[in-house]
Image (cartoon, rainbow, N blue to C red; front, side):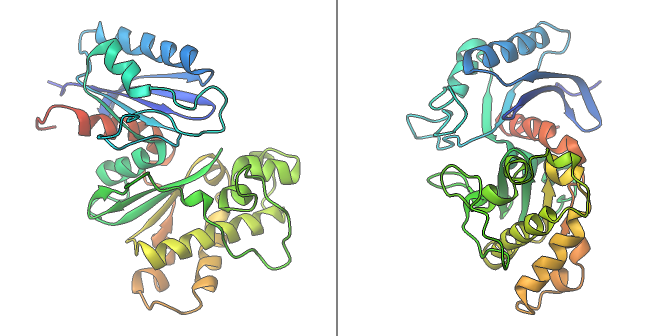
Amino acid sequence: MHPTPLAGVEMGGTKCVCTLGTGPEDIRAQVTLPTLDPDTTLDAIASVIQQWLEGAAPPEALGIASFGPIDLRHNSPSYGHMGATPKRGWPNADIVGYFTRRFGLPVGISTDVIGAALAEGRWGDARGLTDFAYITVGTGIGAGLIVGGQSVFGLHHPEVGHLRIVRAPGDSWPGNCPFHGDCIEGLASGPAIAARTGCVPASLEADNPVWDTVAHALAQLAHSLIATLAPQRILIGGGVASSQPHLFPRIRHATLTSLNGYLHIPEVLGDIDHFIAPPGLGTLAGPLGSLAVAALAAPAIER
């Protein structure tokens, strides 16, 4: 008999992926919806969840892995609410409250990138690791940071995409972030690449010079994480990274150049191809992240 399924929703800036199942080997249904205004989007998601609840094997918990920022502090009056996102209509949206009132199911919430990190730790290339980072490079840039087997958040979840970095020599483009200009997200996200080149990232050839500046920015992020979190592995996913695999050797080389021989860690210096790598779950890391969040919210039973 199959275990009781979970329901998960990966809420992205442009689309939401609803998944029913228990893991990568047991995905029973998946529905993709556009991300519109909060009322329209949450109602559409709820219709999908309702159909699954009325099915032969209803889910026992719901996990939401959402674009952010999200208030993840359980003792906060705005727990489960969207923060000051630039996405119109979404600031202060009560995501957890909506689904809790609608269904009465246990509901877990995290950011989309923390969810993907949890999925990689549960099913992917971070299995057996206690300290690692999952970076997403897409509409935005963020990271799920796992330390001691637990996701990191205190007053808020990490927003490493908004770190200010050492710019590539000779690069004076002002960046695309509406808050910080040339932070990592403002230099290397999908919208930043499009603003700089006039083309969608997936359409750009590997020899386009923009990729050198993107790799430099992401290597600066890797350098920062190595010097602070000291992760056992850095996984990089998201739409930009998955569509441009040539970025990985560039990021690795730029990271080693930036470190400049400091920190004699064999896993970094001697095995950089394994240390900085694509996610083991590939493009499923995001959707499965919502199931990983649901698993944490589900009643404590053996899975």
